[in-house]
Amino acid sequence: MSPNTLMTIGQQFSRRSWAEPWKIKMVEPLNMITRDDREKALAEAGYNTFLLRSDDVYIDLLTDSGTGAMSDRQWAGMMLGDEAYAGSRNFYHLEAAIQKFYGYKYIVPTHQGRGAEHLISQAVIKKGQYVPGNMYFTTTRLHQELAGGIFVDVIIDEAHDPQILHKFKGNIDLDKLESLIKREGAENIAYVSVAGTVNMAGGQPVSMANIKAVRKLADHHGIKVFLDATRLVENAFFIQEREDGYENRSIAEILLEFCSYSHGAWMSAKKDSLVNIGGWLAVDDRELFEELRNLVVVYEGLHTYGGLAGRDLEAMAIGIAESVQDEHIQSRIGQVRYLGELLTTWGIPIVHPVGGHAIFLDAKAFYPHLEQIKFPAQTLAAELYLDSGIRSMERGIASAGRNAKTGDHNYPKLELTRLTIPRRVYTQAHMDVVAESVRAAYETRDQTRGLKMVYEPKYLRFFQARFERL
Ligand code: F0G
Image 1: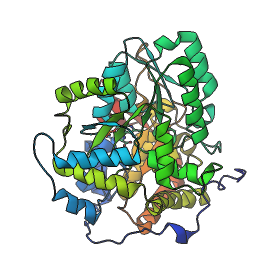
Image 2: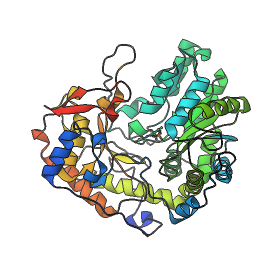
Image 3: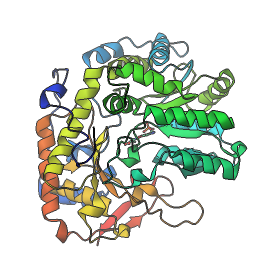
Image 4: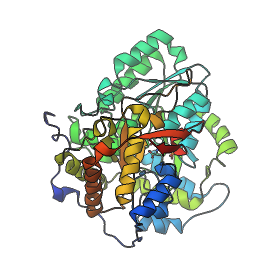
């Protein structure tokens, strides 16, 4: 496969091959309000899509987190919740599912991903230590920083360019990693933080060769490797599609092998695992497990429920098994690509190659006349909502926050608006409506003036910041 043209990667599927391996049993009506009402709702929300009420949203592409549709099996599992405070049978089902599909020995459930990020960061980062990772994620980096760590981005340079075609844009740059270790000393590295399908880079995968090499380098220096497994099943799909020697391996086999190169993982099960709430932390080291088990009772709940109900644990256990089915993940990514290909055909600038969970509109290219301090990606999210009631999310300067030392804005190279596709929720016709709305915003792009931030929270500002029109 040669990535010569923009479309090459991602056109591997014929339309037939990704049709959903399920049919619809229950529907939830959508609401569409008038443009005047959307204008009012957006102003009230301070031009921040996080502050809109979902009743005012038509197609909700804010996030793929906790927004998926559960299967009839998962709903049936909810009825089998064992709500014992301690030792719920559903915990043991979850433990068995994680051991079987992810391969780790010791499991700590948490209420969601950031609960797990908090525990692992507190347990393994010493103040002043560096945490190299393949691009930052908002909550991950914040927990690393709150534990006294210093995040260092060691992703390959290609990841910061929306147009460069690379099969594994989420890869770690081994030279960057090695020079950090040499410069700071292995004892000053807390661990290597590797995320599968890198969210902020556009859902870009990491190759098996790369994780193997990272582990080898880390072993050489006595450093541990921990995974953010949030979208690792989607990562396994790209390995199966693109990496030599994996085309005939199942998603489940690839996932298990990938995890085997790490010492543990944290998980937001609200993504890959097809549940509305849940997460976990898993490690192979008994001593570290003891420490995490100590912490979980302080911050989340007893070590057999971690802030979740028994029924949530059951839905997660079933969701994990469904998530690794090859035909599920093919249709999941097939739908994302369908939207990406439509937009590309119409000349709309998006991140290439199309990644796993979302289409990322390149707001810098969309609005070349807006400087980054005018929040182009936030502006585009606002414009899409006004046009059609579609809700998207900013992944640019607002999300990047401020430099912990200097207090200046971080100016990320990528200034993106994310159209995130929930799992098993919307149809291909919804994707058509979304693409048409993006095209409408593109046609009127010259009239857009940008936003200024008028309220800025201290942590994770993008969630609650307020803006005004310029
Ligand atoms: N890691 C990654 C890669 C994520 O994308 C997220 C959440 C988390 C960790 C934290 O997990 O939300 O369960 O606490 N991402 C969501 C998103 C919020 O919209 O991308 P959480």
